[in-house]
Length: 295
Image 1 (cartoon, helix red, strand yellow):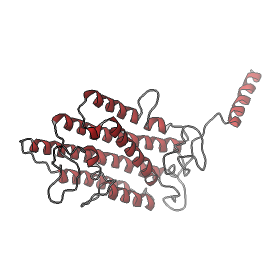
Image 2: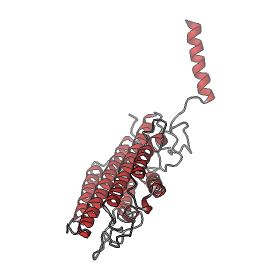
Image 3: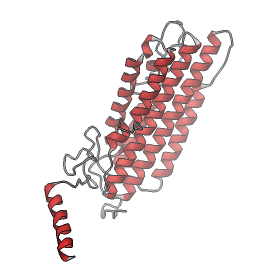
Image 4: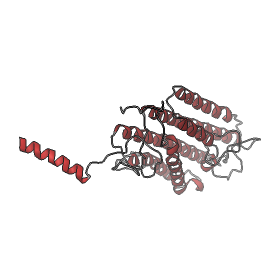
């Protein structure tokens, strides 16, 4: 028994020395393992650092979830706006207060953020970063910046065949065209929903990565965010819906599979790029004098 136990222990030390066991980056280190960590938890394309305290983790995770919900809510507003514009163009005048819908979503985001920040768990840098991100994504009044949800509306409602703009009235801040047919409308609405789900799923992957690294547990964020053998990654599901649209043959040329791929890649790139704002590096402790213990 002693020989077996000794061999087992020796084997463990041997594997550890040989690097067979991966170690995720620790609190305060970069997600990409540039300053420590190894294995599947190293997210090469994600900016930012593992939260250095439990409070900072709660702040970043909570605000990230709130932003994901706000993005989904605004995209729903855009879908309803496009549907109303299509009905109006085709002889069924329909009104929809898109600005009211969008402002309600932004107000809910602001209220959630105020509640989180009111707990005094956020570093000033976190608050500043989320302020900047909110301005980028939900800028009002127009003109909308290119990376805002409004500014990207024209990438989905992209076919100008109808000749009618979705938000063509005075002060309109949502680019995009009214789809030319009911099938084209169904396609554009579906792509908008696909992007909304992709954004929500990727944000969840980023949260899981941060939480797992903080606890010292490996998490394959790339598999969660993109594709994996089980075909249950966020991008896997996006691609599956893309293929269904291709089979239905209801999309205009600007929403063929190649263009949908580009929209998905753009969303992933924007989310990965913003991760450094959601999970900033070099933060101080909440009191300036201590670091919260790990879970």
